[in-house]
Image (cartoon, rainbow, N blue to C red; front, side, top):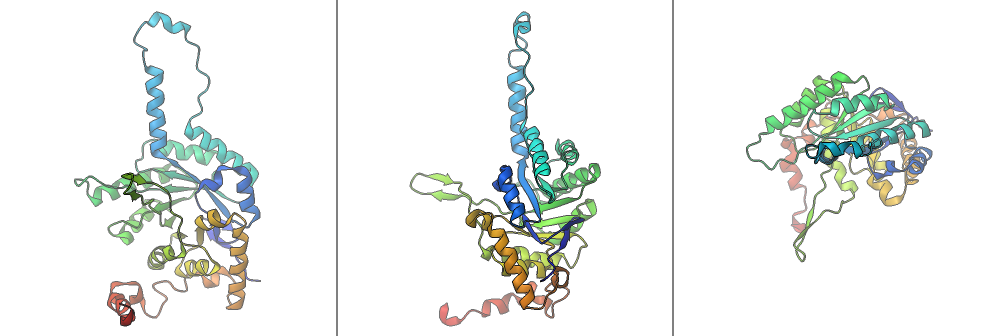
Amino acid sequence: MAELKTSYLGLTLKNPLVAGASPLSLQLDVVKQLEDSGASAIVMYSLFEEEVTHESLELDYFLNKGTESQPEAQTYLPEPRNIESIADKYIAHLQKIKQSVEIPVIASLNGVTPGGWVRLSKNLQAAGADALELNIYTLVTDPALTSDQVEKNYISLIQEVCKHVSIPVTVKLSPFLTTLPHFLARAYKAGAEGFVLFNRYMQPTFDIESLEVDRKARLSTNADLALPARWIAIASSQLQADFALSGGVHSPEDMVKAIMAGAKVTYVVSALLANGVKYAAGLLNGLNAWMNKNGYESIEKMLGTLRLDKIENPAAYERANYLRTLKSFDERLL
């Protein structure tokens, strides 16, 4: 039997299958099922900056509304009970998960400004998070905002969080960065120990009958694997950081491709949402069978075998091979 053990962010994991951030972590019984089905770690659902900011502003408004009028009546107002914020609930749920499972639990923050994330990151560490995932992206619609400004904001956030926590920090990124290798190098220097490639944008579609935007989330397919696998194959040859592949892992062969590209772990979400939590066990059994059949005794032996610096023709990952790829189509099909 092949050895599936791997490491990610300094954590020793029993295999490379990590349950990525999703609604699956909302229920304790489902989290336990993920562990029982073989998941080596859990990434909690993301805590969004917009939710925390909106809640804070709303609470401030209602607590202060009318405080300057009829001050003599204020003594008749009952003292408010302890108010549990969205962030408090997230931290409490993290603690419950930690008490319920033995596998590592990674907290996930989705935001773009330092603000209260430093304080919140410290609270998540105190609550027992084994690592922290910063899920950062901005959908830029302002033509005056440059890519350099956006990336500087990202680096500032990463740097501030890494400065104030001792648990490992990984960064989940969008593929839509101007020069990804340069940004990864800056983020690594700022303190990030790992990277998750990639964050999947929720792409809305248009309902041309109702003239509304349809916001339904689309599950990934294994066709989505090519983009993160290619970039991990490039980036893992340039940085000592740990890489996780997110998006498109639906079969044991998909896991093999991700690991050969250089990913220490593969995040699985859509396959579990579509097929049920127990599907994780089938993926791991299939991975083990594939490795035994093809002579790979461990994940370590397979890791990075298709990395940019290890393949015979590195141009296959670069623009030099673009024309050849286009010509690979059978002209009779065009």
